[in-house]
Each structure stands twice: as C-alpha cells, then as structure tokens.
Length: 444
Figure 1 (cartoon, one colour):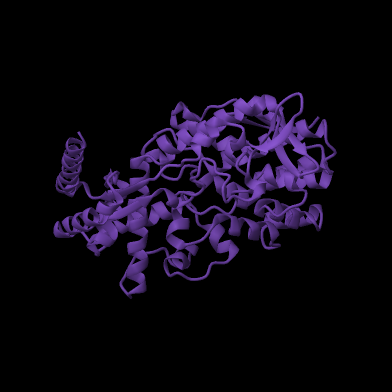
Figure 2: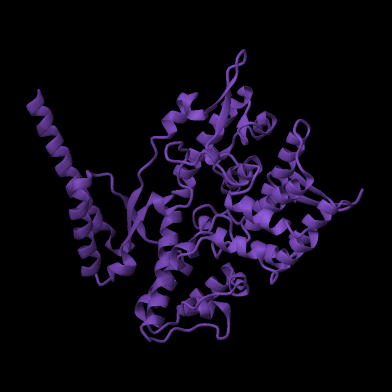
C-alpha cells in the first residue's frame, strides 16, 4: 500500500493512502500552492503574543480536520450507504474549508471587511487556481459539491453538517489543537466517544449523537465555552489584535487622504493598502509575512501615529484593557470621560481608544439553538427504550446553562494613561458600591 504520513501533535499519525483515486486527489490538493500557503497563516492569529507556544498554522489545523472527517466517514460508512462522490466532496471540503483565510486568521477580515468563506468558495470553483483545476479534473460536479458543503447548502445535509455546524470536524480539531498549543487545558474533551456515537438520521437528513454520547457532547460544549473565556477572549490577545488593526487602519487612512506610506510596489499588498478590488491570485498572494514586513518598515514612518503603533506592535508594547462591568446606563459617561483622557494625553482616540466586543469574534457563541437554522443545531438521541431525536438543550441542563452566553465589552488604551483611566473606572465603581450600600440600608 502506498501512503503519505504526517506526524501530528494532536492526532499522532495522519495517514493518506496514495494508491486510490480519492487518496491521490487529496495528496495533490495538499501539495497545491493555495493549500501550502496556509503554512504561512497562524491558526490563532496573534495568540502567540499571549501563549508563546501558539505558533501552529491553518495548514496543521486543516490537515487535522481532514483526518477527523476521514475517521467519521469511515465510521458512518460501516452503517450507512454514503455515495463515493459525496464522500470525496466531504473530504475535500474538510481539507479546504480554511483555504480562503486572510493574514493572521480573522484580523484582516475585520479591517478589510471580507469573510474567508467567500474567498474559499471562489478558490474551489475557479479554474485559475490549482485547487480548482484539480477538483474539475476529478469530476465536473466536484467543485460545486465542495462549495455547497462549505456554504452549508449541500444535499444530503448530513455531510455538510460534518464540515459546518455546531458539532463539526473543524471545531473538534481546533479545540484540541488550540488547547494543546497554548498549554491551556480547557479544550480537552472525549473525541473518541463522540466519533463512536455519531449517527445519521436518514429520515430527517441530519447528524445526531446516540444517547451514549450525550455526556461527551456536553463536555465538548463546555470545552468550547472555557476556551473562549480563557483563550479566544484573552485580554492580551485581543489587545494585540487591537494594536495591529489600528496600525493597518492608519496606513489605509493615510493613503486614502493622499499621504505617503511606504509599501512594496507592484505587490498584492499594495492593492490591499489602496483598497483596490483583489483578484483570487491577489488575495492568495498575501499572508502573515507580508503584514509583518510592512509593519516593520512603518517603524521608520514620518507619520508619528503609524510610527508609534508599528513600534508598539513589533515590540509587544500592547494596550491595556478594562472590562466594562458597570451598569449599561453608566457606560456612555465612562467611555466619554476615558476617551477624553486618552485624547488629553496626546493620543488620537480613533487609533488609541478601542472598544472590544464579543461579537467581533467569529463563531463566538458557545452554543445556541434559538434563532439558529435547524442544520446547525446539535441533535441527540434521548432515551433507550423508546429513543427520540431531540435538540440537545431540550435534554441537557448543562447546555441550557451555556446558552445564557457571555457579554464581553472592553476598552483598550495605551499603558501611558493606565492610571488615569483606572482612576475614572474605580471612581465610578466606588459610586456604584456606595449607591448599592445606601439602597441596601434603606431596604433594611
């Protein structure tokens, strides 16, 4: 048997057979330059500014998601009839689901206003990319099938849910991988038991988890909850993203107003800075290294704001952050006073006073059924004597608790005004405490 083996820190060995038509296609997709580019994009964006071990890439995560999809389909194939062409499409979709990502994962999406899935679908469908040509050469229908799975419109829907839902191979891999690479142990859950318990509701065309897997899925959702609270929402990580976004926005605004900003001429990144429409090849030309290279050069900028922000980012002199855990009615006054404090110290609030909300984080909900499309919900088998397939929050008290969500609202600002902003914050906290004590005394 011919095969290719990848050693992986999470799954140990990822094995691809190369002596089958399906296996040969997957290997060629991995070797395509558009997929190899993912080696140059950090999975956790600026997570390494907080967790020094978080150097892993979208490449390693995508291989992990593909490996899990292979295992899940092998398991389901023992019981269900899965069309071989649909299987190839699902494997390709799991492998390629992140191929459209921009620099530092989600950071550039926020600045430039795009979504990586849109680019991913273009890469898959285009004959201008090697990935697109490979998929077309396998079968004329394959690119459209892969795109439909990534977009969540594919039929049968059960296969699409394995790539994009609230219990999919993407999340299953990145929770374990991010937990391992950051050293935060919150993302550990019983992967093996979930794979063992996955099943297909053929009548309802959906994935569900057998009754024996309920507790493993609860553990998975709790792992997701704690990883968001402790890793993805970490103040330092979010502060680093705020500094980088401010740096990029300053460069974009300077160029837009006709000011001089250095850039590597005749490159895709020049088009990014000039806000020109990018082709697929332009988008795929840019990775983390392009951003870092330009930020390093901007340390010499004559513009004091761009110069300063670039030095802060490269030297890891990040903003400080405060959580606005005060009554909503008082937040506006505090924000106004803190913004004036930052401005009074000589910092332009547009770049040095940043509000940070949970909604800025893609996929920040731990789990929700309300308002979600049925295809994205998690379904479990309830009962053994007369089993019934139900949405998990109808069965699990643990999941109902997680649905309460988490309100993240912070402000980030330079360390130079920390004492002044903290004083404003604590003065309001003291007023809140005093008012609460008076109210309590009246109540007594």
